[in-house]
Length: 161
Image (tube, rainbow, N blue to C red; front, top):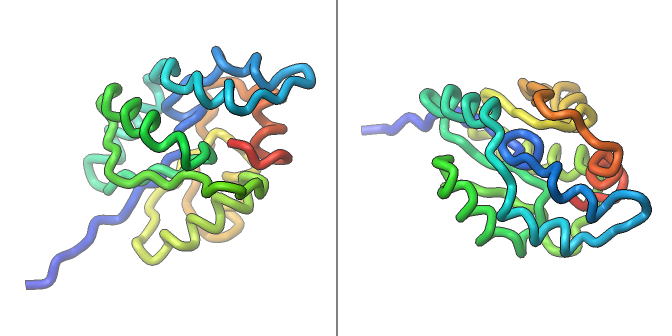
């Protein structure tokens, strides 16, 4: 008997389901304490809008996470997802030494996931969403939390999240 794989819904974490505003001070005003920024991730509050969308799309799709968080944050991130009632089966994190801008990094991962039928991609970075749409992926902008300039620089220029 052949099995039919479900299509996947791909979600970013920071700014989509995790509220990072409490740790932005680590990367604002010329400061770039990336270790401190990421080490505080366990304190992120759950964003109810993102959690509701994950639950909704997760009814008919397998949930896959695609984040710019560094690989060394896997344990913290997996625990945070589980503690907040979110699936944590598949988690794509940024490999060590990969500082490509978020649109390039995430589009490469989406292309790798593409054969699994990406039914939806949700991200808080409008440049990432535009790149995904231009490449033919159905993408939605998570706009429930205003994006700080420091986070935009970190994602789109510095390749840090």
